[in-house]
Image (cartoon, rainbow, N blue to C red; front, side, top):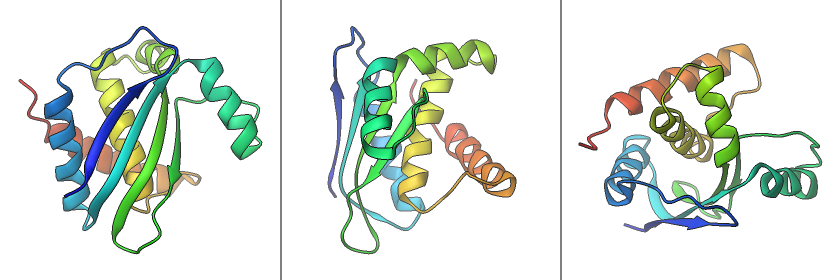
Amino acid sequence: MGSVQFFYENIPFKLKQALKLKAWIKEAIQKEGFQLKSLSYVFCTDEDLLQRNIQFLNHNTLTDIITFDLSEEEGLIEGEIYISIDRVRENTTKFSKTFEDELHRVLIHGVLHLAGYRDKKADQKAAMRKREDFYLKKRRLS
């Protein structure tokens, strides 16, 4: 099985329980019927993610996550996921969640995008949220 890696860009943040989170992410990928080639998460600031959003997606808006699918073979997960820690922190207040719960939701949200889930329409958002909740309940981090 491939690797999950975590990187930090211009931000004083370190992920807690990285090894357990990697195992959880790999398990979700398998449950979705995919094999992992490689998956990189990059934790950054709002400004860093905004610049990527403008450069690669032509969107001049803040977001919590951008997912780049780099896979060239069907059934394989290979990608880069950029996460704004600033957005995740702000969303904890907006959605009345703990920082860890919101961060973990975003981590798995990116995986689900790579597995083919979309979230542009209401029914897609509902399906995505249901699947996120499913995996959040499966966490074994303690």
